[in-house]
Length: 163
Image: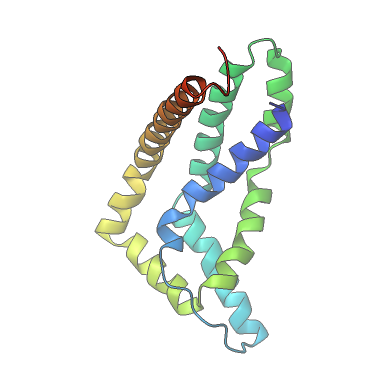
């Protein structure tokens, strides 16, 4: 499989796993807003992403996933992986996430999430979220391997492939 495809998958999976708690909220309509209201909302989204530790989580998850990809391509020299990591700009990714929050969530939703993540339960959630994400990814990866093996066994048993 092409390394670029794997890296794209890495980024996609990272973004989806990082945004699960906030995106679990209901989708709301977008009423007409003034420029100052829009600015306030964008600032609130940025605050939410800071409070939830999205930047640190993004770095952590991408690093873990890159490690997993690296193990599948031992022939690729470390300098290639270093170059790839140097090209990643987490702030750029976050700037691309902001419009998604803006599209699906009202300013009131964002304010509610900020209040939640500032609460004791919210702080507890953000403190364990990296572990939840890491362990969930491991479970998903293991499950994918198991399903892949079963599928290959069935295909082999039915004569579609030979190993």
